[in-house]
Amino acid sequence: MVFIGEYIGTIEEFLPMDGTYTEDGKIYASVIGDLIQNNERRIVLNLKIPKRAVGSTVLAEITDVKKNSASAIIRKILGYKQNMSVSAAIFVSQISDEYVDQVSNSFGVGDIIKAKIVRNEKNLIDLSTKGNLGVVKAFCWLCRHELILNKKKIGSRTLICPKCKKEETRKISDDYGAVKDILF
Ligand SMILES: [Zn+2]
Image (cartoon, protein in one colour):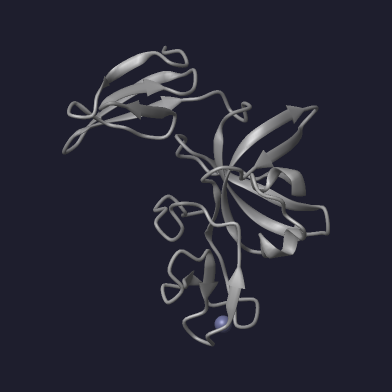
């Protein structure tokens, strides 16, 4: 069992996973959990975090977009292998550190987001995509093709459909298109 802020090891020894943070090459726990070591090419760390605990990072699918909030289904808690199906909500104030006018400028139905649980009371779960979290996979509103980062616009956070060239905006995660764990 490790606690938040506890020293785990160095990046030469371990490959840091979710539930950890690194500082000057040293790995620390960012959640409370059990340490799992797994012998492959390098030793992989995986923190077992309490299910649906506040602070857990999840992958969720957007199922509805309203004016002031979006509905989502949590499909996976990062660090856990098994899939799940748990309802959650994201309020407009929890989308970004910047002001968001319309939820529909940040999320689309069917998008997969990486988000953090910020509240879990009486089975009402609220998520947040502030900071570097956000959409990791999105689909074209017109043709449903998977959207890719619009590389023609340097520094922009817009996505483009490679099929019909439609441009769309999202609150994009830092690792848009690079999350391999999306296998629901
Ligand atoms: Zn399209």
